[in-house]
Length: 544
Image (cartoon, rainbow, N blue to C red; front, top):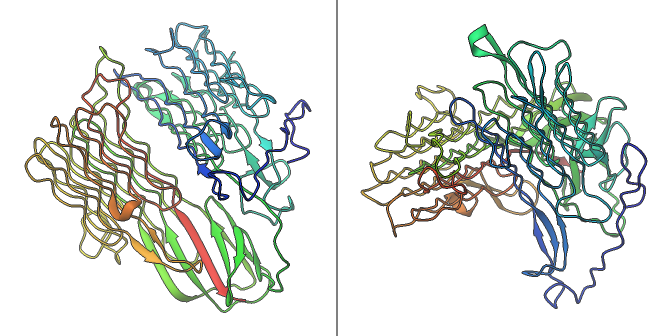
């Protein structure tokens, strides 16, 4: 894409990548892999690094000959796996820890690529306070901390999805300086401890999350902010005894010439497409739905972010709450509606071998709001052994672990939210197996003996013109040797991983609001942990 450049003006446009109709696997099929978000590091006695994001890929199936965008580096923790508090390397590097500094930021553009994919993370320091370095961005390096914490490195604007006018909100993050969208890969801001700083850190433009500040012992904490979904933005750094935030999931955009369309949209916002009878706006991240010509009623699907899976006999994450209306009035029309799409909850992380295990559950997904339908609640995180293996409540509840109950969903009579149904409860755990996360169409299955419960089913909708499942629950993890984990709901929830597997639970399918799979790894294995929930989605349609 011509014209892409760093903050300093260095060109970033790579050479053309040929994709002939006879390429790929020989019949024009190309593999597209969207990188998942890295989970935030954990606080308290665990103090683990933030996890690296995973790679995105476009190219021939099962070969190294395509285009790989490297996942971003995790932020350094006090007890780091990458040296004494150093940030981790990646597409852009994570920030260095601000305890007993200086602690180096992670190396960007790792592994090397030309033109560069990203920049180094900022160094962390301790000088009258503990200042975490910021994560690097695609457009500039993360700021090294000094007398205050560092701001995240800038991302870049890539106008591949259409005009950059302020009315276009389909893809990427918004730049507040010019009100334009299509910014990607901003770094996360550094964390600060113990007291609120005079200049709070900001995430880099392009979806970077702001860092946290404060200390529980001094009476107040501002939590770190997640990177924005589908931007590749980094999560903000955490503070003393508080978690760092998860990054934002990646994105792959493919553009090509099509025939001209006669239909005209009556609103702006989201990725716009047309069927034979209706105009469809798909929001896979937050933005504005701005009605420019009168519309009486819209068809709308709203899905919140799915919960993350737990680890060590971990419960599956619950699906995000789901609401659908085949026809609901919009008033005012014309008018502007703010769309907030909930991020997926991070799966539980695993400590390095030989260190104290984190014993933490999966994180809840983020809420989704539209201004048209009621708020949809994020899915509950899956239970994770200790200190409380109970699944968390949410739009759908997370699965229980270690003999505890699954979380409650949002439905009539629910102790979580007594409202019209958005989802179902999570399955109960057994001492040796965990329950599945609840789904939009059914409860997560209870564990039985040493067999983990499958995730609750999702619900199919054809609002885009093609039937697709949304909000399937995550599968539960099983720590008994040789048994294996359970499947995620409707093929879109993350699969559980059974002991002796030391890989993470499966991540949920992107932009479906599904829960992550439970992890089966023993605490102390560096690569274990629960799978990440997926971000939600909002889809609005009306007659063309």
